[in-house]
Image 1 (cartoon, one colour):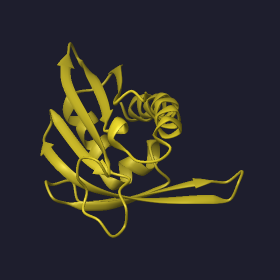
Image 2: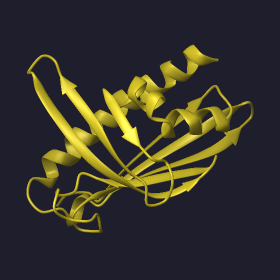
Image 3: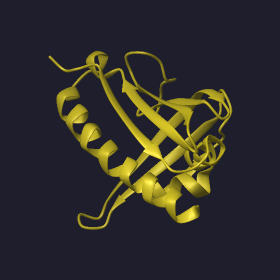
Length: 148
C-alpha cells in the first residue's frame, strides 16, 4: 500500500516573509525548485513548472493550480493532473507549505498528499517525490542563505 503523504520540515535562517517570497515568486521558485516557473500565487491562480534533465534530455511540464495563499504563513497548490481535467482529490497531488517563525528563522513544513488515491504507478511517484523534496529543500536552504 502506498503512503498517502510525504512530510518534510526544515529550519531556514531567514524571516518568514523572505521564505514566503522564495516559495511563491516565479523568479525565486526557478532558482531552487524547477528550471522554469510561471505561476500566479493567488487562490485559483494557475501556473506551469518545467523540469529539465540535461543528462537524459527529458523535459517535464507540470501544471499547477493554487489552492491557498495566506502570506506569510501558508501556500498550497494542486499539481500533476491530466491536461484535460481540473485538479481535484484523486487526480492530483496537494502540496502545502506551512511557515512558522522560530527565533530569527523560519520552520518550513512541506506536506505533499494524495498519493494513495492516484491511479497507476503511485508507489514509484511517491518514492521519486520523497527523494526529490530532500534535494529541493536543500537547494531552498542554500538559496535563501545566499540571499541573507
